[in-house]
Length: 434
Ligand SMILES: *Cc1c(COP(=O)(O)O)cnc(C)c1O
Image 1 (cartoon, rainbow, N blue to C red):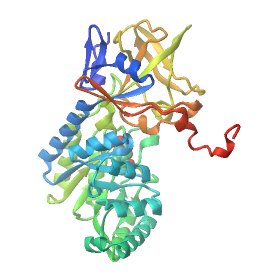
Image 2: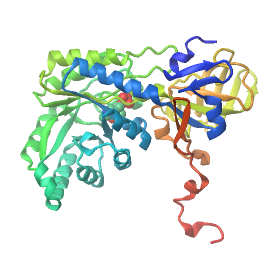
Image 3: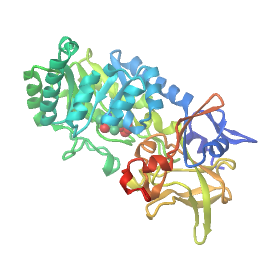
């Protein structure tokens, strides 16, 4: 048995001699039986504890600071509710995320709207919801927002009283982080934000308008970053732009997916940002960070059932999910470890592949499973971020449920998609026989 396997699973994971792997006191084999597979399991208490860790590290280092959850990494109403209960801010980058956040009970003032191509409809909805901050990405964004706030002011007396919409300017810091090409966002030529030399003009435009208030600057250098230097470099890049009330330094801390990954702990990441901020930013400023992946990845586990085992030069274990529930392998070549839930760790070297019609549809390559057979339940750890959110219907897959486990109880917070859901958007005139 690989002794490290539990280090990749949620904090609330244990191995029970009779029940196998448990999360939050619930046996994963029972979750698979009750809710079927594939299924996403979340260690609810572990997630809450992790949020508190970030809050404490941030609050201890910088008094006027704010933790914001980058919700695109795990947007379901239950997750928004949990974040609202924790009292942290929430990033949204689209109409659906904004609507789900409000539905989950996140207050408008705790929301931050992002996006490199926000539509007018999104901006109008955000303004109507009273979002705390809009992060403007480009000059058209500024014009569109100015117009939307003006329109809203004409319709509601309340907004006239509230005055202006607070905005941050997204800055492209020209910092290249060592991560997958697809998730690097801070380098020269990135589609996100304004180049440093255009920022002063954007600030001028915001200040000249009647409906916006220049609250500060924002930057985000990428995702799955495994060292702290790019974050420090981004802070230094912002410092050269002048003094502001708010600095939002983005997310991007990497998660530990495999035994060989050694990302900084959240405290190290936050500590490095704060050290650099102390040296370069006004001490009275408000500091925001917006982690997604590193906050939620480890709290999630995906369960699959083995459909067949092919034994040849290699052992290939095919399961009942794949790139419809986890796009990370196909998108960036992310590596995942795995284990059987009732025979934890160790065994023979196998490749775990999905059920979809692409050779790139793999889940874990070269991991060890103990004598895998048809019907076994496989658990893939570190799937709490960017899996549920990128779920799709490829090959007619019905999207998997999300099950929160805590105190020995399993709660299905998102149910599995049904064929009814699957057909709901096909207009009725095409239904056979009608
Ligand atoms: C995606 C994103 C984040 C979160 O990134 P993680 O790597 O998930 O921590 C934060 N801020 C912005 C603007 C983002 O686009």
